[in-house]
Length: 517
Image (tube, rainbow, N blue to C red):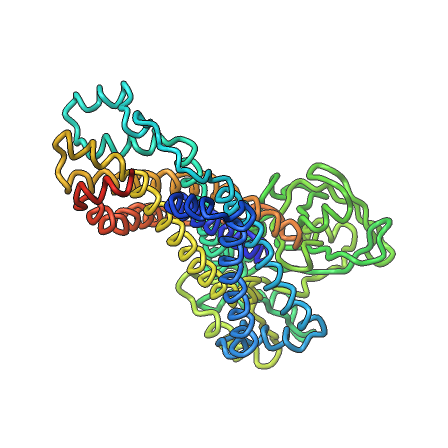
């Protein structure tokens, strides 16, 4: 996922560069024509833009490599430790050189596409049609204006709709970083779900207890049940089993009883209520090539065990190569089987560490208490990486937004004369540009949310499936957070467009005529 984020961020940066150069070329058409008139060839014009922006990219990539090499180990936490380990790897010099060079080549290729348009500019500027699509009001727009709505709102909407191709390109470039931000927020929410609601992800027990041979099963259960913070005790046994065609062992678990079933986190199927019924992790299903509803045969020692898989459970341990059933089912095959492990579910207000210390004291050396490991504990450094990615993507979106604002203002220079001629004030003309920019940002935010949520779920589920946990672990960000993201995009776009639009609206008519002549 981190590799995909990096690649997508690079693509978003490349698209932002492409849009910025394209807007800049449209703003310097007269200068390009002058260069052509004094003898510059199309290839020379292309190389002017290409060399300039490739130099920017090379300086940025070199600065990033130097900062990573010199300051990377100073990042607090495991991320800085990971950079230190990476610097000691044999592939470190090659990677440190290849990644910046690849980024420069990619940006250079994207820049070349935009610069190629500069080479096609004719030596003599071609005047734009007098009846440009942005000036001709559509029939729908005239009807809406007749309803008494704000001219700024209607004309701003018209400006976005009239330039369909360019508006779609702008919305697409704005939507890409926002989409990646939605995916990053979903990854954050999924990690937080492991911490806040572990019972939904196959971790209902907070503690596991092992008793030595001096304590019987009944004495151990009674001792555990007397602890105030313990809500439920589930006896368990775990043995290694062999399956046909495989040399590695799988984990066969007997958890809970039929009277007090273990609270499995099921992603598919149902709980094992009957004899010989079991649930399995995704890793086991992939290993054996079976599905829910199939029967599997395994060997425990010299005893065969045949189980009917009725559900798929989320199994964070043992790469998901786990099959679980009730203790009664295992005892049918081995009557002498006794619990060797106890899973403890704690009360909502109980402190896990305090309960563990209390049990160790009450057991007087006969109990071995361990906290259940949470896979999200190892993903804590990913939180800082996600925050950094969101900041980088927000910066790319900001650059693209500034480019879109500049292009919108430049496209409206010719319309400025017509808008002033029909009596609109500078404030109303400013509101038109602000409205057009805000509507583009709104469309980008809606597209990003609509596409980002299913993409994030697919990516996280694919990661869960490859790790053996299985699909069904993805958690989307809260709706309020998505609303705040969309509102921030729209309000930020409007705020950034307000000042340059106001300056353009207050330009003198003579300046406007010289700009569009």
